[in-house]
Amino acid sequence: MADTAATATPETAGVTDNGIRRRDFLDIAAVSAAGIGGLAVVYPLVSQMAPSKDVLAASSTEVDVGSIEPGMAIKAIFRKQPLFVRRLTAQEIKMAEDVAVGSLRDPQTLEERTKEGHKDMLVTMGVCTHLGCVPLGAAVGEPRGEFGGYFCPCHGSHYDTAGRIRKGPAPTNLEVPEYAFTSDTVIQVG
Amino acid sequence: MSFPWAKEYTPTNPVMKFLDEKLPLPRLVYNAVGAGYPVPRNLSYFWNFGVLAGFFLVLQIVTGVVLAMHYAANAQVAFATTEHIMRDVNWGWLMRYAHANGASFFFIVVYLHIFRGFYYSSYKAPREMIWLLGVVIFLLMMATAFMGYVLPWGQMSFWGAKVITGLFGAIPLIGEPIQVWLLGGFAPDNAALNRFFSLHFLLPFVIAGVVILHIWALHIPGSSNPTGVEVKSESDTLPFHPYYTAKDGFGLGVALLLYFGLVFFLPNYLGHPDNYIEANPLSTPAHIVPEWYFWPFYAILRAFTADFFFIPAKLMGVLAMFSAILLWFFLPWLDKSPVRSGHYRPLFRKFFWFGLIPAMAVLFYCGGAPAEEPFVMLSQIATAYYFLHFLVILPIVSQIEKPEPLPYSITEAVLGSDDKAVLGENATPAV
Image (cartoon, rainbow over all chains, first blue to last red; front, side, top):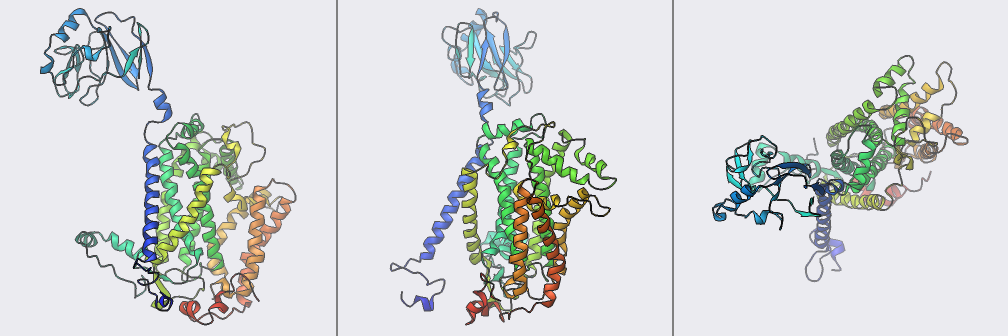
């Protein structure tokens, strides 16, 4: 080590007793620190594109469902997307329950898709699970498809009275958002 | 375009070989900032600021593109969207503070870069074109920074826009129509805000383009160095990588420490509280000053308080302010001394340290001070010296000065026995 000052080259300078160059340690330490720092920078740059706080704050909405007559539906807005609330008639409930669940593409019972004690209140997103169009059938006079629920005109997906996919390209049933009855006639979605 | 001993790019990896044949981008990088670019071995830390300026340009573009995703250039909502960025957008506060302080740091490193150019006469042949392009970049930076400051639509934004476009109103006869045309109205409003946003987005890419020309022009003669003696042989140079990538990396680390110190702990230190009040066309803030990086030129603008023969004071101030920078375009031909480095120019050094630098400091201070005595008089004296320095003193000094002996080569300056006698002097001008 004593003579390295006279003969030092980048390859031999600062070699410690166990044969490791100080320079290699510094290299690895510096490049690692810069790498970790670079990754730390990426996180906020990616995260800034996620929904901002004001968007998230608007993602909870209350809907008064008390005035919906059996057989009728309303459209509300949840997260800037249509929300269908439909009050089923006794016949529609029967139609939904008569289907063999095992034969469905996305097997779910009407009970699983509604809240206890409110089996006649079907709350789903009005967003086709195929490519996001708004299905028809919530407003009076709109076609309800072959199974009496909703019909998506974009690519012909048919949903039944429980909002389950029965025919067409959609892969899953209409999404049931997270919601709860805050009173007998009011639901809070989100 | 480089020295004959520059290492050639020889890829061994088949992918890199393929790339080199079809699109030699790795070769370009290798020859520009890799081992294939020989650089004088004696560069000091003053040669870090070009790379730092490039870094801050990229930082400004990245944070700026992010901010533009959340900002709306409409006078009704611009101020609100700025607050939206600060409060609602994930990490929006970081993006905005990084961008606002990034502008300040961009100017800090560019001013140090220019200072280096002044002291070591980096503008002299064969590097005139690098200097001219640099002045163009500086002018573009000033325009970009000014328009960016208007976007938050606070009080300082609004009145800054009004005052700066008012400069054009000083032009005789056509001045007022030009001001109205620039603003698209009679005062800053939607039209002005929208065009400023559009241009503020465009100009950084124009700057990036001119920066490429600036670097291209640099790579023809290669970097200057603290002795000002041109490279004579291979022993005068080191490959850019790893020697100067490491040195620039260290400088970048120091700059980032200072920068993030400001971003995280004093994010509004360089700003003005008035800009957190929404623009109000009916009330001017009591003390209106531009951002700090415009202070020296703002002081020159305000130094002209009386009509000069037939030229009104307002026009004179505007002309002087623009000339103060346009003057730099003529610098390579005003300073005729064949010696580049200030190290070897005793008389130049005196006027530099005891003339130009104090004058710039006074202008800087007065530009941020209120427009009252003694600041107006100080600005006038400093402005007079500033122009005198470039137009009279520099040409005369370069004629009458007897430069100190130059080292034969960079290697001699670094390794020679007269090492200390030649280089150790830079701190104390001993004449």
